Image (cartoon, rainbow, N blue to C red; front, side, top):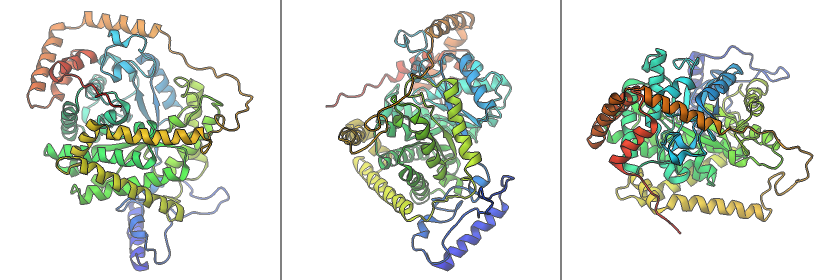
Length: 555
C-alpha cells in the first residue's frame, strides 16, 4: 500500500474516531508522555493492506476505531459450584468486586442433560460447576441479579437449548422483557465431537436445535448471541494455535451455512455469532492468533458468505487463560502464567476475558484465589496503560509475520476440511471429519508431539521439569460437600411433588410432536420449562425421538 492510500485510511479512521464515544481519561504514560490512540506507518508499507486501521476491514487491528479507549474489555469470570444458592453468592462477590459480566459453569450431570437424582449423576452433583435441574434453580442462581442489566455467558452445548429456555423463564419471572436480554450461549456442538465429548444426540438433531435457536433469537432477542463457537476446548485437548484457530473458524463457517440453509439473512444472524478462544503461554503467538482470527473471519464472511455490514463481518470473542498451562506443582507460579496469558489476550484485542485462578488445576477456585484472578485483570486494565493505544504491536515485524503465518496455516486446514466433504461445503467436511476421527487424530498428534518435547526437556515448565526446588506449602482448596447432592435431590423431589404433573406431561407431549415434525422447538420447550419440567425430562423426551450418539471406536 502506498503512502497516499495509507494516509487516506488514516483520515477515515480519524473521522470515525472523532465521532465515537470515549472513556473520560487521561491517555498518557506513567511518566506523563501523551500517546496517540493508534500508530501506523508514515510512508509506503506493502503489508498495510492486510493490517489496516482499527475499526476498518479486515479488522486485523480491532473492531472499533477507539480500541479500548471507547470501552475496555468485559471482565467475565467463569464460576459455578455446588447448588444454585452457593453459586449466586459467588456471583454477587464477583460483581461487587468489579466484575462486569457473569459466566456460568455447570456440573457434569447438567452438561450431559441429566437430573441430579439420575443414577448416572451419583457423586458428580455440584462438583465441577453448578447443578441446574429446573427453572427454579435458575431463579435461585440469579436471585437479586437483574438479568436485564447483566450480560451472562453460559458454557454448555449438548443441552444448551433447554438451559437457555430456563434462563429466559427466569428473566420472565423477574419481570424482564425477553427482548432486553443480552449474553451468550455456547451451544457449539461441533467442538463437542471434535474435543470435549459432551453431546446428547447425533450431529443432525443437534444442528436442528441450533438452527431453531438461531431463528428464535434473531426474531425475539436481537442482542443475544445464541452461539459461542469454541476453540478453547480444542486447544485444551492439545491442538496447536493454528489448529485451534482453523478448527474453530471452520465450525463457525458451518454455523453460517446452517443459518443460510434456514433462509436467514446473513447480515441479521451473523452478528449473533461469537467466539471463545484460549490464551496460551506463548505470548506473541497468541496475539498473532487473535489478530489473524479477525482478519480471516471478516474476509470469509464478505467474500464467501456475502455479508455486507461491518457487524456481520466482525469476529467478537471471549478469551480464557489456558487451564492446561497451570500446574499442581508450585501452584503460585500459575498467577504469573495467568497474568502473561491475560495480557496477550488484551493486546490481541479480546472483547471479554476470564482469568483462571491459581488453584483451578487442583479444584474449583477458592474465594481468595478467585479474587486474585479478578484482580489480575484489574491491574492490567487500571495500572499498565495498555488500554491507551489500539493494537500497540501492530506493525511489529515479528507479530505481523506470525499473524501471516498462522493465517496461511489456517487457510491450508480449511482447504483440507472442504476437500473431505461431499459437496465442497464446510459443513459437509466437518461432519466427515468427525465421522472419520480426523480432527481427533490431528489434535492427538499435536498433543503427543508437545508431550514428547516436554519429556525430552526441549520444552520447559517451571516447577515441573526445571527449577523444581520449592519452599511452598500445601494449598487450602475448595471441596464441595456430598451434602450438596443429597440436598439437591431432596429439593428436586419436593418440586416434582408440588408441580402440576398433567401440565408437565402435556407440554412434553407437545414438544415431542414438534420434534417429530418440522416446526421450531423453542416455544414448546419454553412451555415445558414454565411447567417446571426438569432438564433430564426434556432431554430424555428428545432422546426417545432422536436416539443417542455413541462415538465409534478407533484405534
